Length: 312
Image (cartoon, rainbow, N blue to C red; front, side, top):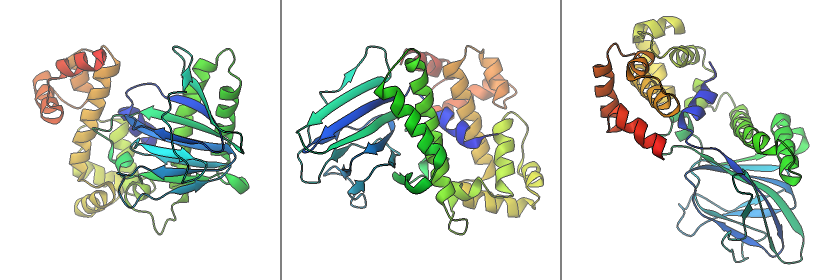
């Protein structure tokens, strides 16, 4: 079971979009917050990613060069500019084709040009998966000098589609953006030295915790216990529980309940399965027990959640 893919899919609330941004110095673009996560890729030229005035003090200006990739976990508002001192304008020049995930914006003067791919993912940040919650607020990667070749290839493909949209581009671009997100997170995980890995970066490769997580994700409806998961991990019950909680951030049964509810919410949003089926696939023997647990977790009955999710 690919836990990273499942975690992201469980948070998805809409389709991704991407914009080709071309700026000639002097240029500055103030980007508002988005309901999800964002990314920028520098195709050529240089620029700066700048926090807004009200950002936490630990977020610092970041100089960007060709091949750099930036992932913004919380979709926080920020500025892109050729220099930190350049005034930033609102992105009212952004142009989209109706119904298309492809857009473009051109701004600035007549100086050196910088070209970027900018985009966002609509993710439910109100209930983030702990794997995503533990990511740094800003991930900065470089694809220069042959680093992260798969990520570099995805960037090139996406850039080509945005540079020259053709038949099929409206279907290709969202798929490439989804792939780009996975490549970004895979590259970040690969960059974590094993000796320094903490949290989910360590859990996904841990010889005891990773098999237990895979089992829970593969079959959340199974009657898992700490003992049965510990058996898969090859540890005693107590040793497994301590190791799981230390890496994942919560006890095994708490995570199992979270994933069952996440699975149920996704089924309610994306399928027409009756509540009895949703309950069974989420590990509950009765619709009543499932509805009670779901309301405790989400603050509303499953039927109401489904109606509101479909109306959004």
